[in-house]
Image: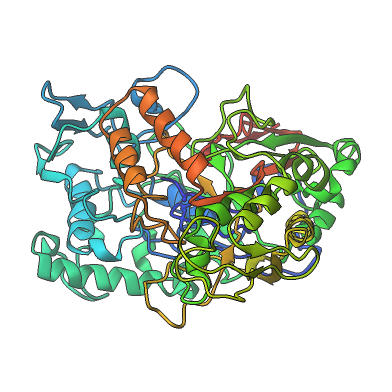
Length: 598
């Protein structure tokens, strides 16, 4: 993911949630190089996108990839849509949202939300009861919800009340900062068709089962089981009832997905296109070959091919870098039974960070399509592309000195070893034995040329300080590097990278309760720090920008993860006869209902 949301072009997102999503993972699905079909059809647009594999608007761990968020939003949009630009109250996109701007009580506890007059695709009115249905299922099954963190939503809801057919209230346990609560807690609220889904089997009777926690669990299990069967997405009657601007016309597991305009959609943003087609590719190079041949409408230029931008533009495409409200990083597994105690040593994390030449990697490997990540809060636009605000620069000599000053014999090009074990000054630190080596495995993403080149550069620089790094590329690095509990002897991953198009995409407020708080749902490395927890909590109660700054500055220096260059989500290339794609949303929403051809 927050949105982990996450990128949908083949990136494994930490979601969630994305990224989220984060977090979330996703992997490139296969389609033959040279995907079939012509790009040009006046009422259709083809888009390079990983095949979504989750449809229920209640996210599940491992299913929070950005492609699932876009797919879900097309069929089942949440109550609120957001925009970073503009001056709308709480950053709510009033036109795209299903509800009006909420009213907040004077004591800051109660949010009154009124839905617009809209309907499901079967003609039934979308009502407060549909939002309550979602809320009840999430509340009764919160441990299985990807966005859940103890103490967060829905734990921080004192009551959910249906006022009338179109209005409902959410009363919180404490007075949170309204912008944070709406943008980072109520952002998941989604109407679900209670009149069609509130049952426990295909032939079951629809009733108010969600209002009892026991039967709510049965409804939840039924819907989860249906969602875990992507092969039936386009044949299961459950998914015929949608609230979004699109319906699902066809779905091929691991392959093409076709959305059709919802003819019964009543929103002001009804689709003008007849179809949108999602086409997956095995890797960025195969996608680029199809783009270069003109056989897809909306694709991307890999960083390794940015020198061919003029060729793509000459073929009738508009090239537009998609900048994200995001950060990129590499978690360290603090709970690895073999190496976790090494990552617990701050001096080692500092040395590793100082061996990462973010500026050179951004310019040379990513061809200028990335910028340094300095901490957990994305850089402001004016500072993006610089090291402004970074606590650590590229300094191999300082990194080597840190290791030597803490009891290590540094072997340039080899493997450094602990020569002075113990917990005193100048010693290696708690749990580190004499002769122990600095040797780690990085689980990284396959299918991205720039990522492979960056890993090779990191391996080379780390070897200067005798830190041996084995790079293991897999299609879905998130799936195989999930958070581990202390003492889990099978928890064997050391470092994980899933940021080929950004590791984490934020919702409106870039707070860290889902990412870096102790036991946060997307805290894959299980970083834990009491001061960090206190600063994260402070961001939830104050709208003062200083709260976010203090949180950012502390974690930028403490290194819960290793900060890495943050690529643009992608360098988009889309047919120049398509209107409505630009500007591309930094929170990675995609609204094909706004597109038109002409």
